[in-house]
Each structure stands twice: as C-alpha cells, then as structure tokens.
Image 1 (cartoon, rainbow, N blue to C red):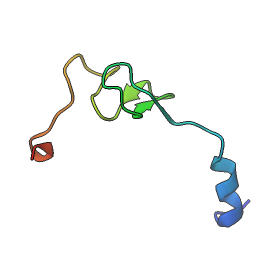
Image 2 (image 1 turned 60 degrees about the horizontal axis):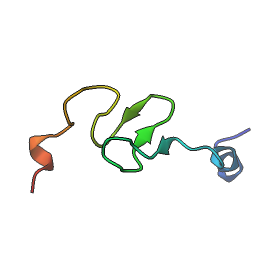
Image 3 (image 1 turned 180 degrees about the vertical axis):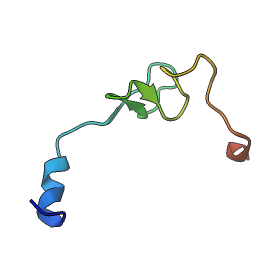
Length: 54
C-alpha cells in the first residue's frame, strides 16, 4: 500500500490519546502511557515550560 489517500483509511478507528486521570485533558497516550499535557505517567511533577506561560 502506498502513502496516499488510501493509506489514510488505515489510521481510522484507533485512539492514540485518551482522557488523562490527572489533568482531565484528552492527551494521555494509550500506548506510551504518558500524558503530553501534564506529564502523568512519566514524572511526578507537572509538566511545564517557561515558553508555555502567558
């Protein structure tokens, strides 16, 4: 199978991110077992960066 439009159908139906227990966002990676928003599953501290503050 190529990398065109037909190959995009293989991606449907799979959930990479689910609801995070700590932050409540839809950012917990089901396979990596890590939240991309708060860092739950990877660190006990909340994930934050200086460039993220407004």
